[in-house]
Image 1 (tube, rainbow, N blue to C red):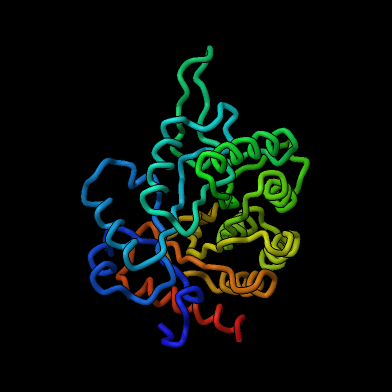
Image 2: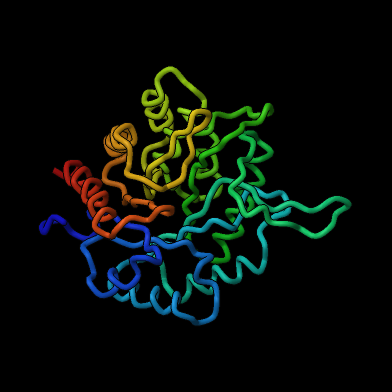
Length: 287
């Protein structure tokens, strides 16, 4: 990594199990590490010990996949208890989750089930009010603002009345949260919607967001099949995503940036190479 870059200007990486030992021992030059919060809810154990060790050398960003903030049944009390405990232990740089739902009751008001997925929500006033209320509840409990990530969605709702960018901007205004802008998700959605110019579509989304609302950016690779594009976080960042990222940096400035890689995790050197590409682009914004 560039020796002249300060930690705040270095891209971060997702801290995944295959790289635990090397990251802690070799301490590569990255700006921060990000983990999935739910992997560290257990009392004690090797994983939490690794996170404590990493925290001695890096700022840590906690990225959740289980709060299900768009669920009409609200936030699970146990889940929020565990997140608060982890936040108190780690004192993270940022705490984030997704604009999605996953919790719903069974028939006849039975027990609430968790779908273990990031399911899309409608972009309308009712969903906005519900989501903002759940976000505010979590923020009040954690005593810090959340970052909410835009989703890669494989369906949409007939009762959408707000454009997604407008929906997310309104969420930030109402709740005081910020956005975690996943640039790869913008491209995946545009490709699946088969818009004539996916890159222009993504740029328009970025331009519709207010200045100062984005607190972190995610970059990842996607998988193309004959029928659908999948946000699998399992390959190099695509050229079109890099182009969209550069547009986001022009719009919002040098926002902290993470390289996500969750499936087919490569050698650490590959991940650091992707982080270096992001760092080089961040440096050009500062130049």
